[in-house]
Image 1 (cartoon, rainbow, N blue to C red):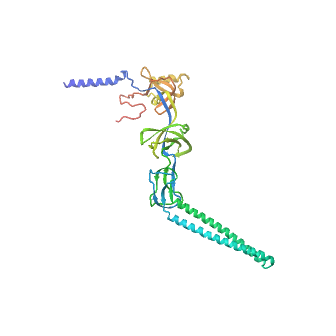
Image 2 (cartoon, rainbow, N blue to C red):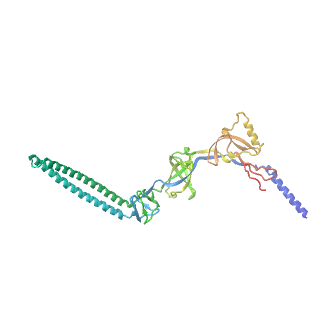
Image 3 (tube, rainbow, N blue to C red):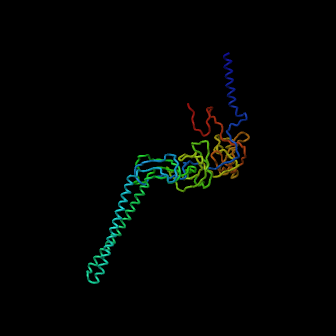
Length: 405
């Protein structure tokens, strides 16, 4: 009984091995294939970018001081001229009072100078009349003339001092007005960098207190297009992109600007292609990363070759594919491959046969067939069965992995 069971098991093993060995003759091709299809291919430039508002205004302060009040917060809607913050105005008010006092002092000095001019002019006129009758000496006339001219000069100096004091008063009043921070545009506050009690120092540069986006219903995508693709980008091209926040949704836009200024990052040169986007639903937010596809050209109703078929080459020498390829190469110019490209068509005998082609634009998955003896539905070889070596495990073509021992 035990011998009978062992015999049955051995027979089953032999039968299974025979099936595995001869199954390639059951009419099923051992090659991996893909069909030549007919359809649409879009030649596009892929890039990444950042979504920004079309116009973002940085609101700062031209005067130094302590933030006394803040009237808006993140996402607050503001109107042009609306007060959004207030800097402590006490020092600025004191500066205005001081400047006003200087103006009053300059006015008094001017009045004193005007009186001096009138007095010296009167004395000089009287001396000129008296010198004719010999009642005063010519020296007295000269002295009165000099005094009158000096008084006129002092008046002009007093007028200049008054103008200077009035200018200082205008500066002080303007600084006092700058203590009240107002929104320069209608928009939404997207950033606030100060809090009440924080000191603002505007001595060297204007600090940014708020960032206001003028209109979030109209956004733009600032993309980084590689220098090898920038020549294909042009104004008006259709653009589609996705964002991580809405992975199942595709947004549309249009190229509005191709900037000439290069962006160099670690010796990699890119250019900013600005894409305008309609954001009426307010789904897109500033700072989001966008995966952009810029449509260069659309090919409709063309034959498409799988890119995997373009990459396939026979791995085993002596096959029908390789020998046919050699025969084509020995034709002294006849049957020469257009552009040096070829794919392998699955022949009637189940073997790959090379077909010279001319490939066109590609979308990364399929390539346009521009020239070649292929038709829709033809089976192209994209892979082949694993080759057996010395009865061991098979290894796919091109794979350099060794067997574990």
